[in-house]
Image (tube, rainbow, N blue to C red; front, top):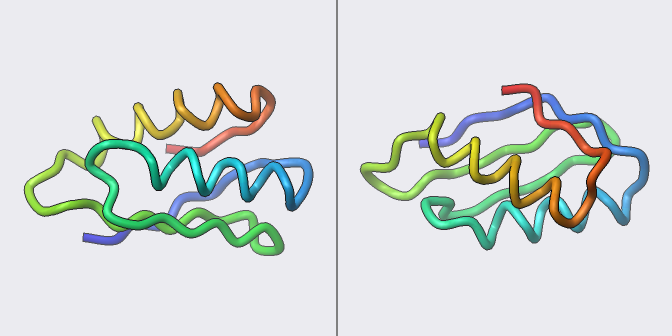
Length: 72
């Protein structure tokens, strides 16, 4: 399953950090951040609870870029 989320991030480098953090989160099959559109598309692994996984994605993103936001 794929879902797209609105994000708030200040620069392209920060967006790349967010993308890497999301990709390294358990339950995420793939993640892409489009800095120009301020959107993150996340593909979840089979059988994963998207809302629980996204809570962890947000925590992981905050570790690498403290002022980013994902609007869940």
